[in-house]
Image (cartoon, rainbow, N blue to C red; front, side, top):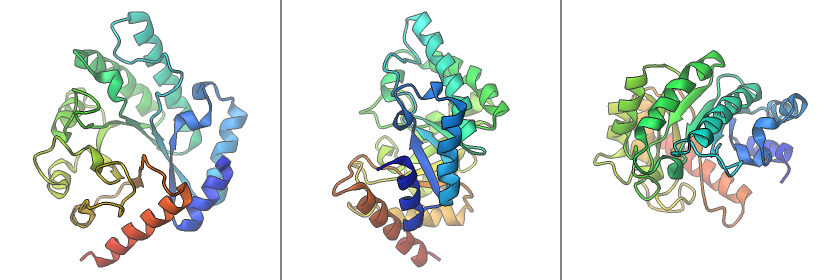
Length: 255
């Protein structure tokens, strides 16, 4: 589906924002010319959508690696991250960049990751882009598997444009439920991804979304809640619609 149709379809279903995989904008998204950036932004705005931000933004070019021992490649990748911050800011006001990228932070590399984030945080702040260090399941990476670990790095760097987020299918290493985690880490949680533990769309499995959504309401969470899925059967539009209706039904039942 063309990007403009994606926007119209999402808004017709009821969504108010769009979170984008940067690689869907081209094989080298940071090189998108100003005119093309303006078209993507206009597609979202004309449909009545807000640009939420990027996820999976380091898929392309394929040589990118944030924490490699190869100093030249590592520096070029952080430079590319810098350019993606500009692209993100050009697509909408005060967007997010969800830093998952499990393969790029595995091994004895946490110091390189922290050094790079310290470098990026003031650059992101200047463009009012918030970088989100995402805790990932241990099957994806051996670093930053819990909200507590992510929050520790966020506190260490101490820039308000570096925060963390909660993704329901990445709660494998947590010892507390999602509702408790929201209450404990609410100061640093800036975004939510909803999906089943196996990556399917909300409502297609057995994850208990109601307590999480209740906790977000109780804690007066003011930020985005995004549907992020990895299995688009039977098709993307059906997945989007079923997810939206499922979540809205739960919201109507909350106290």
